[in-house]
Image (cartoon, rainbow, N blue to C red; front, side):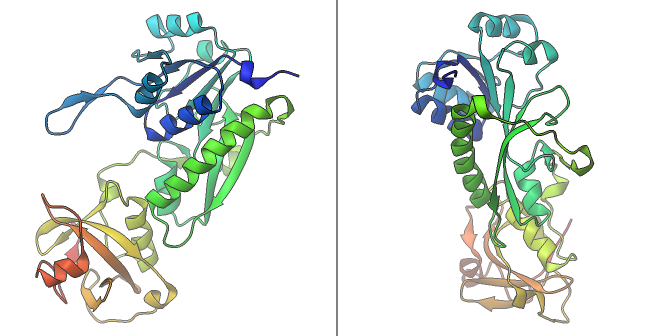
Length: 319
């Protein structure tokens, strides 16, 4: 029986999700011989180049890190061949691996994906699963093929999504599960049974666009609530309040809010409670606890009421 601790692992990832999975592997004494990440990008007002989170973890543990434009050809592929990995593990890498890379490691290339495949293949599975009001999601580790997120599944675990879980909460649940699952995957590598994905059940989680971040209170309350929490705490959905663009956070929903009847137009603040404002939707209402005005920090909606930035019967509208 092989010992997965002896595998020469090349890890590929870019943002925090990938970085924390990488650190879990290193802390558990897996042999990560090299890391690939996307190039540094300019951020902030000064547009200074910032390294991706995966690169920072690699440097922290003195693991060689490479940031080629492509890992499939040229110097990127040459770096990879020199490392001679037994296995490649990717998590939020953001690049497609071609056949020459997929065939290189004898133990295969495996992706840690944040959905219950074949549902929510693609770029934004966490946001889309919340936006669509799903009751659960999970982590799937699958053997990579050239088709997007379509390979056979080695291991899959699920977590529940509660009605008021936002993106931040679900992200943390999935991150914890991903770290647990990737260790189980490697420790039981010789005993894995691969399961083909059912293409008839496949769905796609498209990239987030600016239009996705606009909330429209003319929808039902539950749809409005799902929209707000899918992008909370980052980047926040947008609306227009009394001709001023704002961001909205901290949506709360319960069955009694769905039954609220009110003659005001959708988008109207119909009630002020001790911990938030109720905003009328097409059917029912949502409670909103936080708001961000242009150039300002997030504040509670109650502070905004007290500061006369919001008012009873004030109105939110799409653009």
